[in-house]
Length: 258
Image (cartoon, rainbow, N blue to C red; front, side):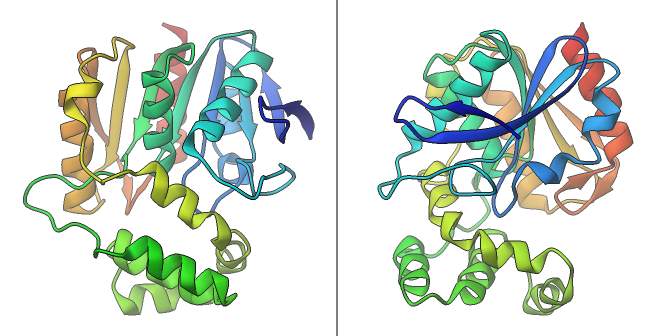
């Protein structure tokens, strides 16, 4: 992988592919750049894609003290490698990070967001003290339990669903990256849509959700699009918290190149 050094000296690993306007792909919780392995081939004929390992994951470095501002700087460093400005596509907690970057003035030409993590009126908040519980589990190196707690308390997955996830091929990665779950929790802030702040973001923004996602994620996407002055929503075919990659690729390519 290629490397760029973020403002605080942390090395961020990224890959570049394709040809056309630059688009940076930003993942959510648990994952590294490989989550986009199916999406990059859909975009590469139309865009120059940049995928990277967020700090603490894959080949990227990390620092002992975490701050959301450092992740914003990491994204800005990758955008610098893309020529100084770029379209950004981000999913889940990564969408929250992309919004924070836009609010901080990072040169994002367009935002495409997939089901940002917010809780809107009518849907319960995560339990109080969640971050403390998560940190305690990780301090005891109970990574599997930390991953389960994140999926149960923040993502509202039922115990039987989590049990099936544990049997799947991605679970090893969930545990390997469990130490970054407090990062994603911090990025989500108080879990509410910051409507007043988002009203200051003039960047064109597409907010997508799957037609088979959770009601609360669908509502979060809708309210995020509503809060952005140049935002609009789009529902696409898919499953829970995931859009079909070929369809997402066509939508993003059209969005990035027009």
